[in-house]
Length: 582
Image (cartoon, rainbow, N blue to C red; front, side, top):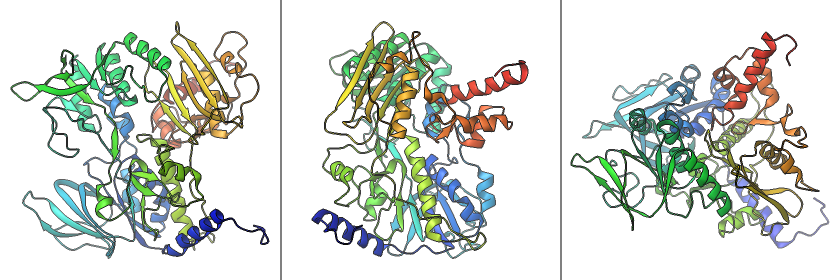
């Protein structure tokens, strides 16, 4: 900065704010104990990224998971429920690698208290809970190693063990919980009594098993909720059993993110796939004498009967633990662009439970989010959480400083951007629908293009910022245009000239080869894996989707890149078996 330049009031206030934040941070010391609350996909990614520090003895890590299962891909639970993927395909954590590194893992455990002053967490371990990895055990008392190892403090009337752990740094990765609608005949409390038999939220493996039992017997599935997850659940059931019913409150499914025209086209695709769409306000559930679901009651309509009701009414960030600890919450646990939930840099949050909303008066996106002008980032998307985990691990590495064994440390890590592009994709075999958002939310749209083909059920809607960058796009059934627009969004490339070029990409006439099919094009957007990286591991011997995933993390998120990976694998087989093939 030019020392002679006068700062305006906003710049001076912003610099003072950042200086106060920097002074409040507590230095990171080697050997600190990091406790991660949550054992979902984002927490697993963070553990994988800090493993080198754990292996080098520079960091100790304990992971606390509420479920009795090791981290699995929750995004693909619906796919597992209808038999499209195996249980093994959901696994995203390498327990053996965690154990070898010395990661302490408590499963089937609930954190009931968080003391930020003494830096302790109280954990209630269910009788069936598991302790895996490392050397610490719970024999009824003393830890076997480390001052921060867990120790038992008592047993309650249900046989659960109360455990306390001390920590130096804490990461909250508690995720989100499904919203329970207020229906007659069902407990509306989010973590209250069990749902009636035959009613599931399709959020965990147990829910998926219940759905699978009905689907395997050809039962009738009713889905409540017209968002993307509800549409996916209804399509998956219909593609397996031939029919399903989707009950939604709006005129058409997905009205909140789609225009009326696009929503109508999606409804046509759903009907064609065997999904009956019912526009109605649900008011209650009916159960038989055994307490099992038989019908969904709707206002001013006949009940919708079925063998299983899947609730897909959105999700809410799990913030109760943070609230009790005095941390700031809004839609989620409020963090800044360095994922800090406190001023000292001891408590962090990431994934679906976190809401990025800094207090810097010069941060325009956060100022606009605070006033409601910009929405918070949508939950349920795995790619942003993975990027946050990668960033946090890099920050820890940088703050730990040089590793004596390597002779040099990591460079300082810049904070996460104030906004980032998002991609919402409908995971379905019969409908190719994607919504792209820049995340900036400009007040006006400079120009755009709109194309609809009712006969082919295709739609292309793109809006540009005044400088020519893509602001928002909805693409239905036009994959090459989608690839081009996705690349433009990720790179920040401006779109100028005649936008009808986008229409030619998916046409038989004058469709030039798209630059987005080149080596640097991103195939797996969840993990950020390029076509070149996939081709490299395939040429080096990866001969299955699972092998490619293990080497690159591709197809371990939403799974929509699986067909392209399989196509690359098929090309390699063709090159090896057909002379002259390329």
